[in-house]
Length: 127
Image 1 (cartoon, rainbow, N blue to C red):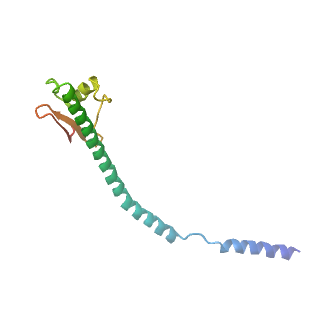
Image 2: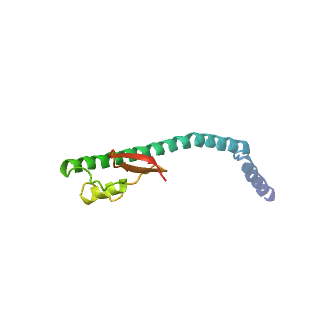
Image 3: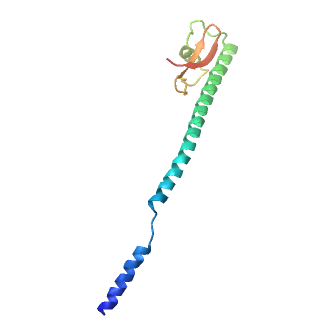
């Protein structure tokens, strides 16, 4: 009886040794492949993010320009005391032509500017 229990234990032990895991080389290969995929994906994601920020800024400029055109059609020209973009947005907001009291550029390092002489709105490098 004692021999029988020892042989069963040996079979269980030998079966455990037959179970194989991943080798160190296989794990290194998988990590290298994942690293290569990440190296390809991250720059693409960054480009998409930058494009969406530029598109948002361009849309904001068009919204403010539309509000300016509506203001000009109903009230007349923009008052001469409006010299900066923030003053322009404030004037349009006060008169009910814009709902947002603050319009800021989302592209890093850029700001909206308003040229009172040409009455043009643009996106320029920030301070």
